[in-house]
Length: 266
Image (cartoon, rainbow, N blue to C red):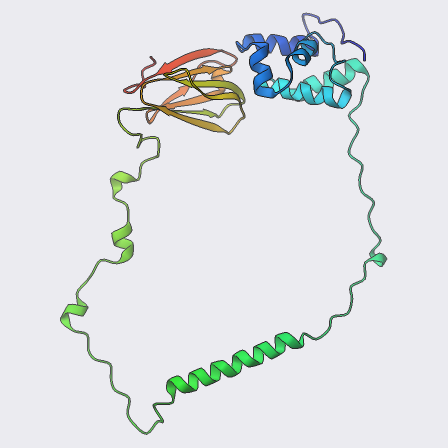
């Protein structure tokens, strides 16, 4: 397995681009290894453009995609650059051969006598039930008129729909209904992927990993929520029901702390 080309100022190599993005995101190699499950020696070798530990081109491209997403990069340009630097091609998946229409012949349908018998039995049972229900009136006697409604029965009563409707004050969002005395933080990756770490006031890790575009996470604690965001411009923050907007600028690494009574940053 050959090593990558020497990085340049205009176009760094694949490994140098991954290392530079990881450092810009404020992540250590151990943190990236934990979030991606790619072993530390392999991460170190890839950042040095040594792909011999990957076990082949297919695994190398897979590791490149995984590491790129973890540090907030678009993986496809890096995979294409790897293929160009190492003289490999991404082979398209083989297309399964089409079967001839002559080989697929439907068998002639047979009459479904069982279904016909069941339908006949149901029809007989229905006729007998209808006859038993209406047999008490042979047409000779007059049918009794229904009793007129009493004043009490004509009074308007609330229906089940009226009783079960929510009052206007309870139609707010779930975030707006956060319990008092707690801090509730929602982080949503609306502008792109971002690496996120969240801990409570005891330092317990609530979440760590890459938050893909369109996904969100919500955290709650009695005293404090701490965040580390690797690509602050890509995420939107909602603290105790209030929209705080982006956590920062694109590519910026921010560390934030929120407590009950915020949205002012702690």
